[in-house]
Image 1 (cartoon, helix red, strand yellow):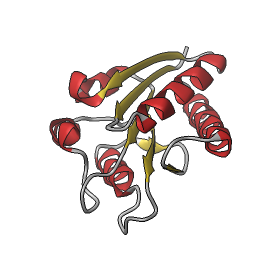
Image 2 (cartoon, helix red, strand yellow; image 1 turned 30 degrees about the vertical axis):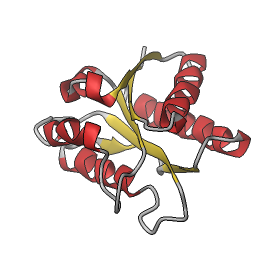
Image 3 (cartoon, rainbow, N blue to C red; image 1 turned 135 degrees about the vertical axis):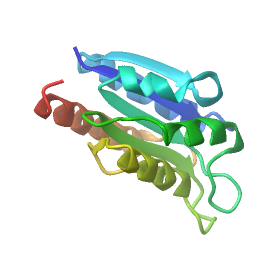
Amino acid sequence: MVKVKIVYASITGNDEDIAYVLTEKFEQLGADVEMSEVSQTDASDFEDSDVCVIASYTYDQGIVPEEALDFYDDMQDLDLDGKVYGTCGSGDTFYEDYCRAIDEFASIFEQVGATKGSEPVRVELEPEQDDIDHLDKFAEELMKKAKEMDM
């Protein structure tokens, strides 16, 4: 069974909603899913998973949220070779750095050897039906990549 770890950072509840949407879809796809809030999670939890997902908002001028900084720093010490990753998050297109934090997390995943399983999903504010459809496809693509890698 594919093990999925979803870690989220949420200030308004939008990214927590995204994490719940993904959890439900991964469970429908037969995965063993664990979801947790970033400040309550050790980055090393990703080492025990097949699929690693970050759902995060972007903070002030396009940076990783403050409550996720330790997690972000700790990720740099991981070896995620053989793991599949995906990033997603909410944002507001009013801001120039719309959803930039998910790109920052993707960069770290690449540096530590994880394999990209799907293009990032950017959600304008709270997830609506169109966004849920994109998140479902995102989960399906991550599972497909994990199965291709014999996980």
